[in-house]
Image 1 (spheres, rainbow, N blue to C red):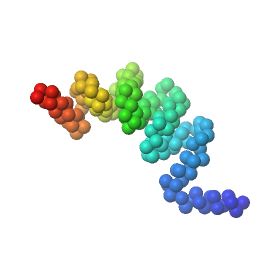
Image 2 (image 1 turned 30 degrees about the horizontal axis):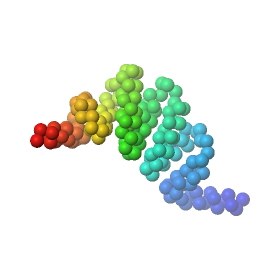
Image 3 (image 1 turned 60 degrees about the vertical axis):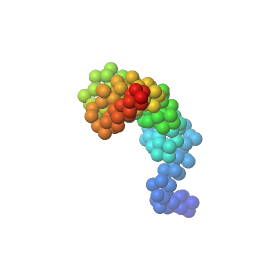
Length: 166
């Protein structure tokens, strides 16, 4: 009984980071199926830059989604795209973001995601630029609304064109 009381005291005095690390240590090797637990693991792995683990958890989260849970699915796809970009797997990042756009278009929910479309278009433009596919980079930067990232991308494309002309 004294051990349980000590464990509870430790939990109550732990910093949020220590509590999260204890949670991950306890559940990381288990077959976790609870949605909240998976989301907590995903957030921990993302914050600690463990992108392969984040992708693994995001895939499990997506498996638990109903087909009509567009918001969750789109959130997980965008997260996977970010992870793939961080590990420089640009083709996979592009694929996830194209899937995101496809779901929005197929389900006619474009209006609800207009602002996010701009982010996705800019992400795609940057990813295509990174892979040397400047034609698609121009296509997606052209589809995005005006923002600072768009201006940076347009400048990068203009600089590239100028360098080719020299």
